[in-house]
Image (cartoon, rainbow, N blue to C red; front, side, top):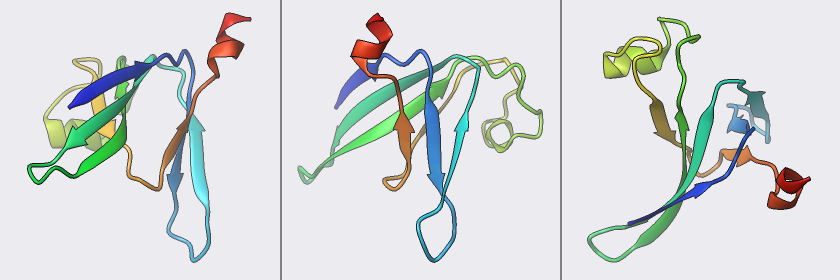
Length: 100
């Protein structure tokens, strides 16, 4: 397994919506997040690359957010990390634009 962090001072995440054609719900969060490219290898040798995002500051999230219910956590108590499905994507600034 390999993990590589992608420098991303800002990001836009896009998720597929259930329509008979391509529709994405894209959003920007102002809280600090970290983006990772994760390489995984199965027991049979199959390999897959996935994108994971860790939301580092959840203190402003609703207490009712499903993440807290699933993890038994409270807003601001710990980072919330998740993988992106294959048909979702994350847009981050290019390395060149971050140097300007």
